[in-house]
Length: 303
Image (cartoon, rainbow, N blue to C red):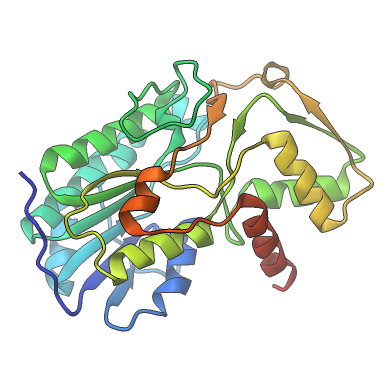
């Protein structure tokens, strides 16, 4: 049985993985908070360190700072290297979120956890994935993320798990930045057209998380949700639009099949997420993927 969080006027909020794509965007949007205080941790230099794989350390941090909400942006995200990285992937993607869920349960707090479209992919389908669809991951990364979801649910803590896909931003390493470089420096480029999904601007996801937490919309709405931008495209379409917006017209971009680029992990062929639940539950209007891409690239150009 999930215990309902009492609505309080002020919360202390911990953001883990604060130096990643989403963590950086959460840092920006958190400055708009009228009442809450945010704490940011990461393994990178310049941040307070917190080993979330050690439940005692997580518990001590929560107690010391009176944390009532954790936004967990920390994860192992290298899909290919996950296949040979042994137990560390399960530790980071499943055990660590379970630790955070347990310590939030102990203080009657909220865990916001980010998951992935990679929990799907093993079964063929061509309609948008819903939250109650059975997880069929094709590799270690997706499997460990699915385990993380299951372990959070098993603790009974108040939680909002958000699965997202094709994440990019102005920060860190991501597909948009890679393609900006390649289309500017390569005369020809092949990009897969047989993997379809929806790009997600991390700034939009951060806005949604902030809205849910700041306005206490999580009250009574524990569960798993899907979020990406609106629309559908292939990686080929995505690349063509990145190049067009950047003015990289000299690069000849051609579509190709996934099997032309062998990978340790079979990628989901159809990563479109059905966002009906999150839109109806939290009253959201989600931006179209191309509009958000333009916004992000404009920010990159102005850096």
